[in-house]
Image (cartoon, rainbow, N blue to C red; front, side, top):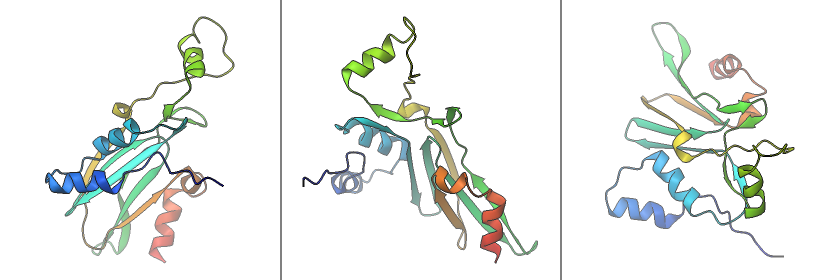
Length: 163
């Protein structure tokens, strides 16, 4: 059995390079670096967040979500201070980065010339939505795919945190 190395990840070399050069980690640039290095075929949503001190930066392309929940003592309740939004072309078709074989790529490019059974989009890293906020001690960050957020409303998640 051949072990397949994940082709869409940030390797230790990339992280060490950024530390050695004293570069602030930019989530969108990290997605671009990982995407550029992809050699396997397929597609994926992508989502990276970095925390530099209290500065939280997020780049999201697709339907994953990050929620920052903060306790407000004067109101004695938890509130959502940030929620990323899903990016979808239409139902069940999230934005994605792809690496597809040339024969399928030509189908996408010629889709306007004939009736293709599959709709192709060409999402780019620059389509990712960027977020930035300051976090505080005690904030709760909940990160999940559509598997979580399709099954629980954010208010339900906040209620669970309050318990």
